Image (cartoon, rainbow, N blue to C red; front, side):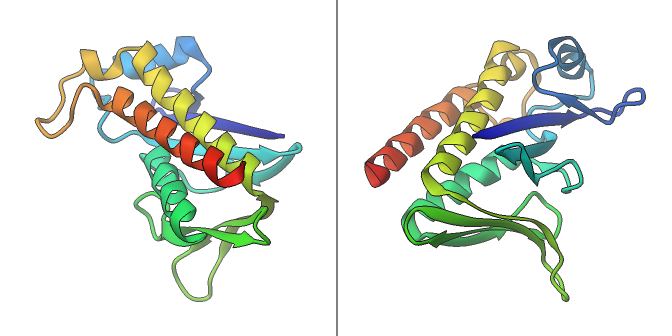
Length: 180
């Protein structure tokens, strides 16, 4: 069983990250005058059967849910992907093993390679759980009307969270077709 959690960066007080599920503190982040929904600094943690796969020691990054969604889309096409994790020099890797397991890792993009996170996980359950986490993130942005109430650049649509949830549904359908 997976537990996926999202934490948003805050520069206020003693806490540097606030859980997506902490509604009181989250509202404060979204209402802060410097908050911009186009580039959200976040940390995503992943636990599998109460074992930490991606913990708080893994670097945070900008727009990580977008990276995970693109990684899943690429993985469904090729079963072996490597892409940047956030904007720092880290790579996320997904490699299929025996058509029912995935070797998931986050590594430094330098020599010698530093393994930040690594686990062999049940493929279908992992992909579904990541999509659930992404949907929770984008749904929270809709709930708090983050894209509706903030000034956005001309290149960013106020519909972005809804479009991302539509993309998640498309990916969910692909996962369902491939694994049923």
